[in-house]
Length: 148
Image (tube, rainbow, N blue to C red):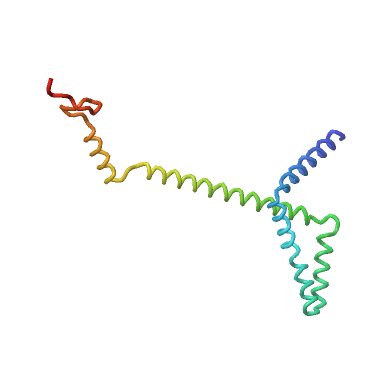
């Protein structure tokens, strides 16, 4: 039983360390705050309705919602962390796909740029024929002296 408890404690510590390492990035912390605000939005709206219009049911609803989610044994923060890490992972996958498609597009563009157009190809062939040695030229392009 003691071995099982140590194994469970080790798994919990590793999980909490992983969550902490994920939350060290400022973008993840901002995302966590946004998710928490969205999750609390029913309470926020209830309080706003109470303070603006004086509706008692807004205050009651907001307080009950907050008491439930902030009470002991509620999974509020676990749900917020799970949603945050899921959104972060989704953003990483989308970014990775965009980078791959951009790299593929750049590779195709460089391959297209590496191939000369038809007019350029003709000009290159013309230059090559001009540089070919003739009877009066040596392969290095120097003229031979016909008069010995």
